[in-house]
Image (cartoon, rainbow, N blue to C red; front, side):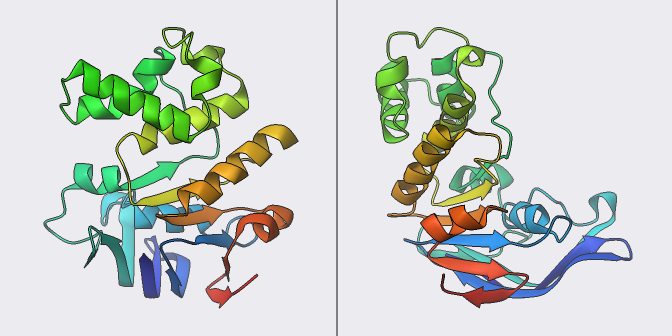
Length: 227
């Protein structure tokens, strides 16, 4: 779960988000929508603490909490381990981000950063993540090829698999289909629904048709309503 209560943030004298309040629940897709420049991406980055207080003049007020391991925590708490936090709260960017390495190495990257050394276990986790995003059948015979050889839609699913391999409890999706064609968009939307079956999913989207297709709850500039 993600809970914001009168949450505001900004840079210096500029306020980006003003007194935003809503709850995004586990088992649902909560969509955030608003015109460009109204702080949607800033909101996602605040949940994942990608904006650090006092860095570049960033500030935040109000309450923001996330549920991890059954416990409500403040991402901006003084003793939070940021590496742990970002393993538990995955962020998928608008443009598919693949690393300059093989398909398999892309998915395994997070595990190796987490000091996993058992090759068999890594291979099992990589396969499970690729299966969950529907990529295994498409890439199983070319795992050693560069991830750059994948299509745009495949790259986005690969980015999601790279996050999935660490078993996050929360997914933050920032316009994840904006650069995809209709077929790839449908695949990612289906994946969103599977992700939300046992996780909290917070989606930023300008696509009102997409929001109607996938969202259980819609946030418009702090207004919470069921679609």
